[in-house]
Image 1 (spheres, rainbow, N blue to C red):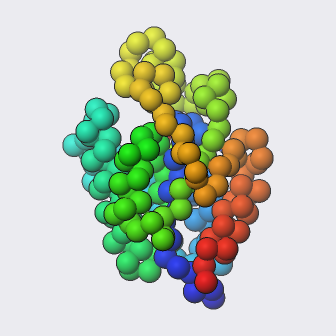
Image 2 (image 1 turned 180 degrees about the horizontal axis):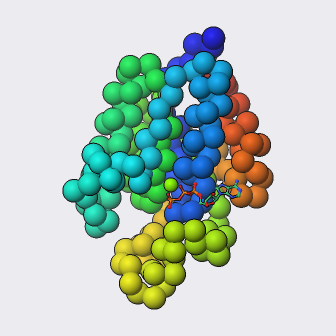
Length: 177
Ligand SMILES: Nc1ncnc2c1ncn2[C@@H]1O[C@H](COP(=O)(O)OP(=O)(O)OP(=O)(O)O)[C@@H](O)[C@H]1O
Ligand SMILES: [Mg+2]
């Protein structure tokens, strides 16, 4: 079994970009090869640990900070962490990197464009946001700051899920001594 450096793969991108789907498929692939990993998903965290938080800027920052603190604990315990959160602001992601440790924080931009996310609108949130029924929605009424120098930018809708997973597995392999 490969001895993985306990990395955090931090998947950032718009709502509907495919972060959760990609993260889940990657975690299955890692588990299949006997590597222990855990997923920290934005929606799951917001239903539990972070259920007191909304979407104001300071609440989004706190959402990310808590996720990063948990990721650090998990990494310290030897687990690979797959964090799938919109995490729209560069400053918040930089803070997450400093909490987790830059040497084990891999920023992955799930770069599906807004038009594609909005056209599918699986959760119906873009439509609500355009109608003005949902304030502070990322990409519509709140900013998304794309990473300037991600370790990887990946569009799983265009390239397909399995090739995207293979790229992430290769990145983990390349980063592990
Ligand atoms: N590679 C792919 N090809 C086709 N459809 C996909 C692919 N990846 C994800 N999808 C579909 O796109 C939709 C959005 O994916 P997903 O829920 O993973 O996005 P997300 O980035 O986690 O969004 P959110 O931030 O709102 O949680 C889902 O319906 C999913 O089934
Ligand atoms: Mg998701």
